[in-house]
Amino acid sequence: MKDPNESPLVFPCDFPIKVMGKSSAEFEALVVTVVLRHVPDLGEGAIRRRESQAGKYVSITATVRATSQSQLDAIYQELTACETVLMVL
Image (cartoon, rainbow, N blue to C red; front, side, top):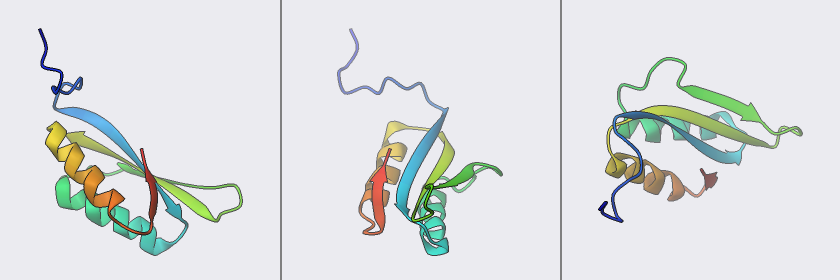
């Protein structure tokens, strides 16, 4: 029987993290800085940017090579603590 606290993910795995906020170069730099703090070997092409139709908001998707659930939890906690971040999926 599996531990109910055990992650359903099998590590290591590629895991996309989507972060939304108001569109600015500073916002994208913040997201990249936070992700790099936890995943220093972030691969080229791992960051994608998509603006809303009106250009007011942006979503940054960072696809990371996750090594543990605690690593993902730390990334989510740090990103959600940023006041410019509206949502993290």
